[in-house]
Image (cartoon, rainbow, N blue to C red; front, side):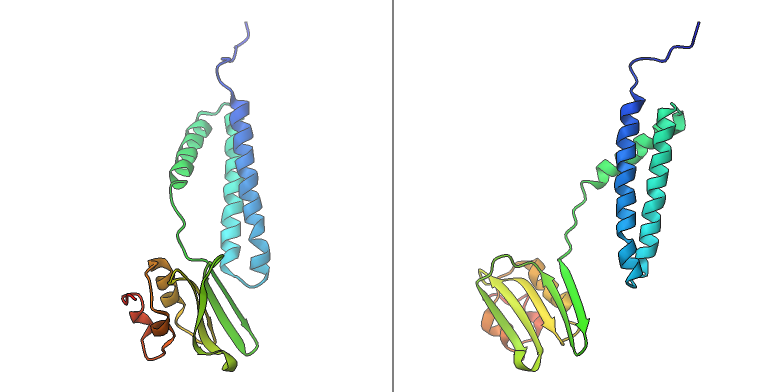
Length: 183
């Protein structure tokens, strides 16, 4: 008599799910390649780690298909970690920077809607900070050739506090104090 396999287990379904997960990890790892080629050195390590994770998940899927106990245990642990990690929130402020020739800028925030743009500094001399305001709250800011203020702009965006546009544009009022000043 041949050794019958229980019909209640579906390793094929688990294999397909793990294979899909491995493909997603592989695509994410390969997506780091252009950034690494552009000089973002840390992306080499991130891409390599992601590709190794894709290989591990693929091998784990093969182990599940072959009904290996270690693979089932490991798959359960990995899936629980992934589900717990799904509850984490990414709350960083969107950020972009560019440094081209004699103009450097950093943009922090996201302003799909705004009521006014307040300038601190002199845009004609290309040395200023611009603030996008919505309901008198800073929703985004951009510093052009003014360095060391991106974190302060991000704090203003994150706080969501109402600010006075006149004080916001006054260079005599320290930007550090704008988060505490209410209009």
